[in-house]
Image (cartoon, rainbow, N blue to C red; front, side, top):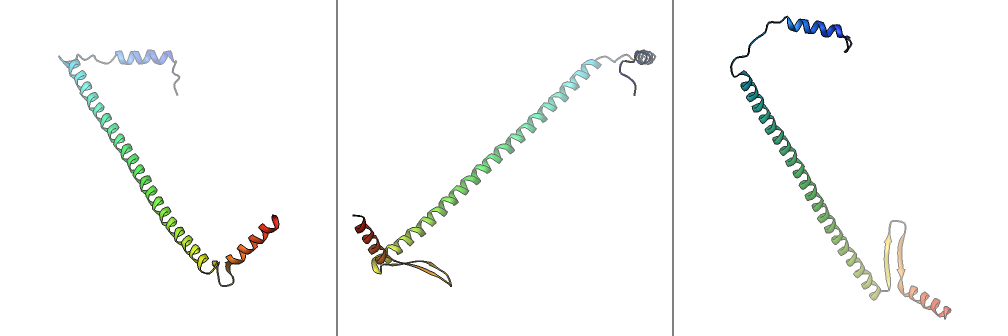
Length: 134
């Protein structure tokens, strides 16, 4: 690798470039080159603008899609909560009805155990406990 501060290299490069034949530019060469640079610069500006517009469009579309998806998920969650609320209301009505009719409430069960509460006995136990406190 040649060191960047080699003054001998600079001298040889200057001598080599100086030995090349000189060319004279044709009339209007500078204007044509500058015009071409300007045209290419304008084209690249339009390309950059088009790329930026495409990225902006993708970003806005992505944001809109995300918002729409979140809205749909919220609507689905609300519908699920409403359905669960209705089921709970029905179960509460059944429990209230069972309390009025029999005084016995079936809570849950499986093959081995069933859980049933006799509300009449529970009410009697609570009344007895209340009477002992007073």
